[in-house]
Image (cartoon, rainbow, N blue to C red):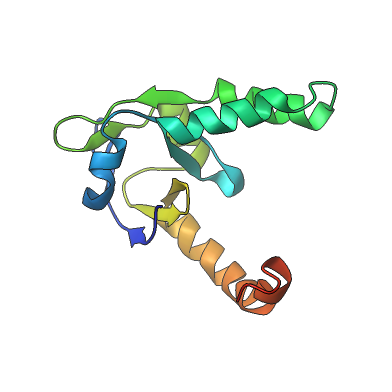
Length: 143
């Protein structure tokens, strides 16, 4: 499970230090792909394989399934962190997420998300009140 908020910086070669607490779990490989709201999703290889199986089972006759799968898989990049725990983020993914230097990496349960720091702060500003207001509808009977 991935939790917390971290603030690594992108270096001049497009590499990002993964949060230290997740390096061991991601050392065997990971997949970076486009996420919603212009962030990047980072999945451990096993979780990406689980998602692949779920999408494989989805009906390809559904236009939304085809469209989502095309973008999701076409933009995916499998990476292995280096010995310092850095991972290279391919230029097209950096462009998609607007990553320049200051990044925010958040834990999002089964994945990490990489955000441009300014974009993350704007997102939080817009969504925190909504989060407070809808928790009962999203998680009925749990919280």
